[in-house]
Amino acid sequence: MKLDKSKPLLLILFSILICGLYYGTVNAKTNDTPPSFEEEIIKGKQLTPLESQLMSFMTGLMVSEPKQAVEFWIFGVKGAVQYAMLSPSLRKQSRSKFEETHWITGQSSPSVSNFRFTKVEKLSESKMQYTVEYDLWASYGDFGGGQKIIIVEKNLEPFKEYWFISSITMQFNPWEAFTPAETVLK
Image 1 (cartoon, rainbow, N blue to C red):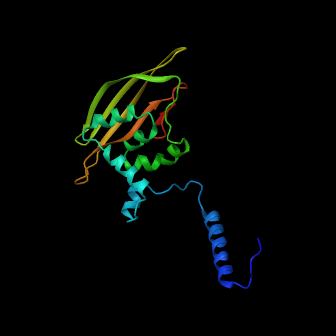
Image 2 (cartoon, rainbow, N blue to C red):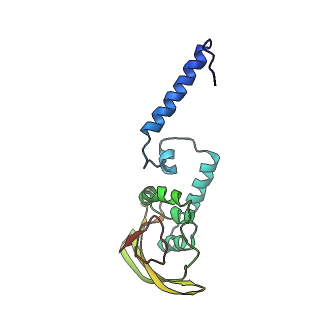
Image 3 (cartoon, rainbow, N blue to C red):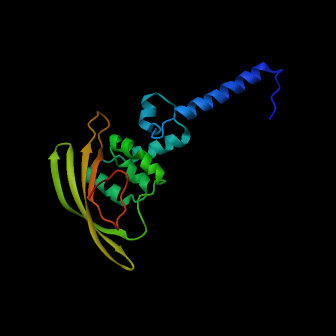
């Protein structure tokens, strides 16, 4: 492409564009994650229609009972619902991993079935701990089971009271997939 030097304004604009692209590329950090919807709203940014739709979806999933947060997370095998059940800090911590997996958090085989709550413990007025056990199976065999310990907390902001998952812990199992938000113990 040959630039016409008789048009200095075009040359200046093109130079600014190239410098801006270079500066942005050189200074971009590999672990930078885009700000969350909550951060964008706090900054006063106008959301796009798609961002508004996603924010409405996530707001609609805010639950009023702690057990509901765990149940939604369990049945939300497609990652977007599981992500929506997380605390704001756990969302921020795990967002890039969810994006890397294209929001897919399960696997086809072995699959998880027969979820059951085996222990419920009230840690405080705004914090509950659930122990959930489940089976791992496939058409070609039984892979035993697993257990997750899920802590659910209540957001205590006025007019924004809902329950969210603040911690998910499980023991490592080579046959089991886990979500980016889980802490896997070896």
